[in-house]
Image 1 (cartoon, chains in turn brown, purple):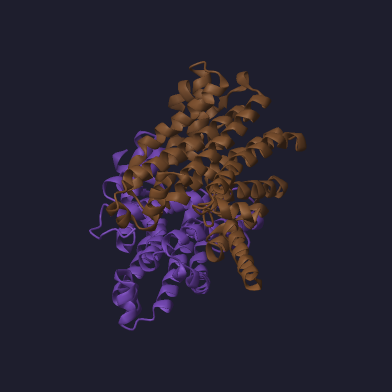
Image 2 (tube, one colour; image 1 turned 90 degrees about the vertical axis):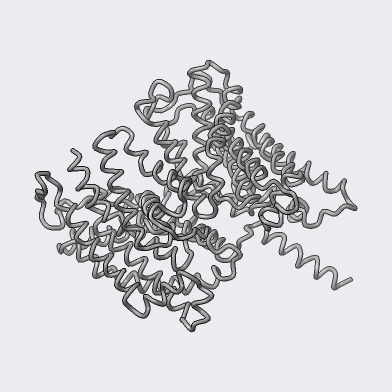
Length: 330
Length: 291
């Protein structure tokens, strides 16, 4: 396991072993996808598995925007809700099938992100809070009784006529594959390199010919697409939901903490973070949410104070120390 | 209706400004974004609630009890986290995540201690009657909130502009490095500022339990967003601007509630976004934005 994390983080991949790098990339996409595809034979709680997959995708979305650009989206749930409601409107008003509707949910989230592109002018805390305000404004808009004919206002959305436990499960697996592929390709692509350059030093990057605004906008839209798809498939699998549930700030909170816990900027960190922490949440959080919240808060404080790189950094660090020790013996 | 919205907006706006003052001070002096600000307000509200229901004394007595407590806790806490913040490449972002965690811890502890339900104080701060002003009738906590907020804010201004420590604090706000070079004890001044910021939040809690119709552990996030909106409107890191921001915010909210109650919920967010995008340094500030 540590070996794959190290490879995927690009630290040890060298030009001399492109085949090894490609193999690691391929494995980073296929292994999690295959594990989720097979998970239903082990755990029969399909809604739980879909929810975990949804959080894997959301954590990857946070990884794309925070890990690659440093923009922390407190209002990330806005895209999730936009995706869920986009899916609902596609089914209820346009008569679309569930699969097309889920994809449309992703498109709606991207459209919301396009409207919110000006937020990228803000930095640091300003961006974080502005994105939260935008998400809360969107939630307030969607649940407004004046829009009942489109969104059914605060009375909730009903997708039960397209309900399919199997269909939504496979859709979620497919979206996990898309998210993994997106992060792997982003890491290896020109855009990923540009984003890392911008993150390291914005001014130098722009002197080197990087279009800073375009690169950031690309990451922003990609991250919105992932959240929208996650929202769409969540809506499909849960079937009946209320605006307060899909625009809940807790969704942003979970996605950010899962990504940070696993390690942002890595490929597998957010997956491990989402699976481990959501299982913990499911074990104690549902019956005693306050105790889970307490643990959660302490985890965040510890990450902030002592482990800025998350779990992945701990593993990579341990591997380096091991490798060093091995070198001494030889 | 215009007159009612105007007076209510000013009275409640002064409270909002006072409630946001600590957030602004912490950011101005320490470059720390205290996401847990609203949760500290909630703790202040619970203190007022317990005093009133358990000890049967006026809930406003929570303020003199909370202030020394909050200053002490804030100073110790700041000393504890300062080394990590100092090491970080991006302390502002780190503080955002750190206090996000702290806010979760406070909310969880408040839920464990006081249950997740909303608690409401049935007795007002000065009895239950209404107050007549300019031919309009207001609940009596409106003027009480303003009457606590104004002297509270004045004390902070006196501290900042008329005391030696306040001078040091303002030096820190304009340049940390220069302040250090001129012999100011940066660590102690910062810790004290953070303590005062928490004390302001906790004091606002004794009023918030009335203005927001009660207290519940989950209120913290909304209060932080409101305080942030107020501070951004007035100019982040500018304590005097916070009061002006509170007035703008209070008036906008009261007018929206009077004329467009269906859409009033959108007002704080839209106002916040509009100010950030059009004039990010704050409506009432000439200072350059650092973030």
